[in-house]
Amino acid sequence: MTKPPGLSDSLALFPLDGDEALPVPLSGSKLPSYIADHRARLRQRFLDGGAAALPDYELLELVLFRAIPRQDVKPLARRLLETFGDVASVLSAPLPRLLQIEGVGQAVATELKIIEAAAHRMARAKVLRRHVVSSWAQLLDYCHTVMAHREQEQFRVLFLDRKNVLIADEEQARGTVDHVPVYPREVVKRALELNASALILVHNHPSGDPTPSQADIDMTAQVEAAAQALGLSLHDHLIIGRERELSFRAEGYL
Image (tube, rainbow, N blue to C red; front, side, top):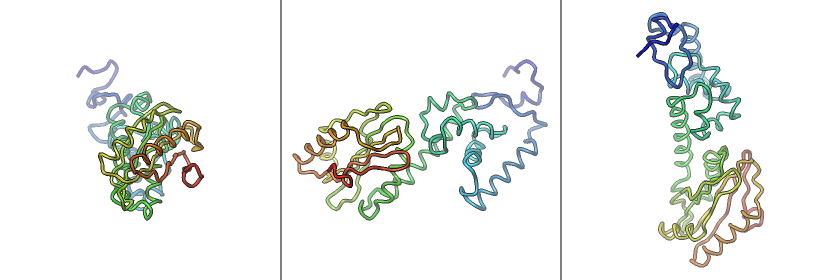
C-alpha cells in the first residue's frame, strides 16, 4: 500500500479504509493505553450491569469496537445518535443512509446490520409457533422491534392456523414514507398457499402516529372482504407507531 504523504511509518502500519479517518498514532501495534483502558472498563461495566448500566452512546461504542479496532469510536457513536435519535433507529437505518455518515464504512454498517438481524430473530422466535392470544405482548414487542423505527412504510402479514398459532410472518410490500401498496388478492392467495385460517395485518407509520388514514381503512376493508370470500378470518390490523400501536379491532374498525 502506498503511504499517504506526511504519515509516519507507525501510522502506515494500519491501512485506511472507509470506516476510519486517520488512525490514532500508535507505538508498535498496541492500542494507546487510554483507549485500551476505556474499552476494558466499558466491557466490564456491561458484563456487571448489562445494557441498563450504559447510556446509548456507550452501548453503540461496544458494537463499534469490533468494526473499528484501533480508533476512539466515541465521536462516531455520538454522531450516529445525533443523526438518527436512538440506538434502535441507528440499527434500523437504511444502509445507504448509514454509509452517508462520516466514519461509517462497510465494516461498521455490516456490524450494525448484524445486531439488527439478531434482535429481529430473537423477537420473532418468541412468537412464531405460539398461540397469538397467550403471546400477544410478545407479538407487539416483535412488531415494534421490526417496524417502529423504519423510515419507510412496511406491510407485513401474520398467518395463523385454525388454533390461532402463528405459522408464518412475511413482509408483503415496502413503500414510501407515507404509503405502501397492498394487493388484497395477493394477501389471501398467500394465505391459501400456507393453509392459513386467519390473518393479522401489520404496517408501520414512519411519522410515529399510528392513527389510520382513510386509505388504511379502505385497504383493510378490501382485505377483509377478500378473506371472507374464501373462508378466512381477518383478526386484526395493527398500525405500529414509534411509541404505541393501534389495533383496528380494539378501535372498532373491524
